[in-house]
Amino acid sequence: MKNWIEKRHHKRDFLQIKATAVMADGLLRQDVVVVNLSRSGAMVELPATTELADSFTLLFNHSFEPCRVVWRHAQFVGLSFDAVLQEPQSA
Image (tube, rainbow, N blue to C red; front, side, top):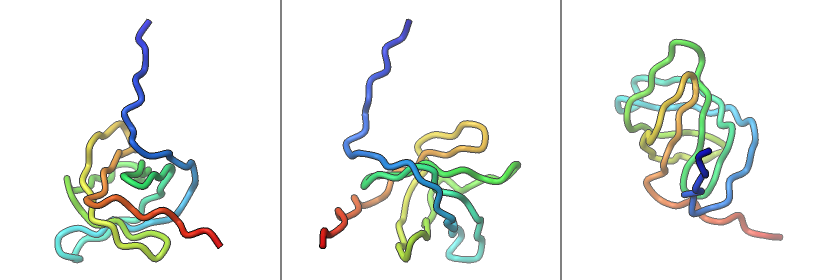
């Protein structure tokens, strides 16, 4: 039996946020769904038969985050953000 070693540096939140992957200097756009999110990356779900570039900008929740693909499996893609997101400010 294999033991899973957690490699994430930041806590991830499971959610369902509609987002847009922007590629090729804004000329190509693809709707995706962010299914989990941390300060350093995300997992997105793609529509069937959709391909994403190795790097692109992810638009979600009024945020514009350059990122790169770190893994792919079926319709899911793991992303690493180019810069760590700031922690939300508490009220």
